[in-house]
Length: 112
Length: 114
Image (spheres, chains in turn red, brown):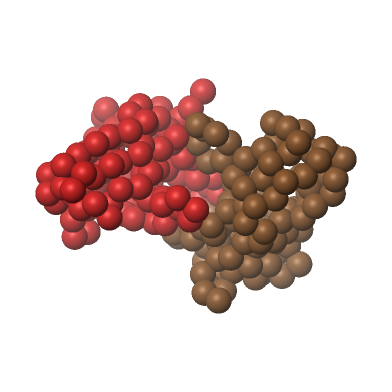
């Protein structure tokens, strides 16, 4: 059973608009969450993270929101740019664990 | 070379072949990881090395054999694989294992087992 779920396999957004990518998790022991971005033929690259003691973390156009009670996090990209088109993976970590648990990814297409 | 490199980028092998995947990190990190990504599935952690010592073996079949001769190099030796082992194999490194340090990924090796 997947502990980290990204229920939308794909998302299409117009350039300049907001992209919202969602992620749900089942394990309440997770205390650190990350988003990675992956372009074709490249490995995933780290984008932004959030600790469970926070509910929001912002870095430029990227903001991650965490709702612990709902076991839900989301990545907002504003404004979206065509270069943001990629697969986005949500990942979760338990304290002092080696094991980063990934979701299955959401493919974002930003249309010019 | 910078970051994390992997060779080969593509590999096709028969079920009776023996091959090895190579990963090298130029970041001065102490932890290295092997992940597997099968089609339409999440990345799955296979192995973790910390300071050249294996600290995690995530129930991986013995036909996959990792080797970490030093903190910069990681190998995955493959022997008598099955077609269902066809996947993208990703290597990653981080400053420390068991921490929230960001993991840096290589581009992966696309493996096809015939």
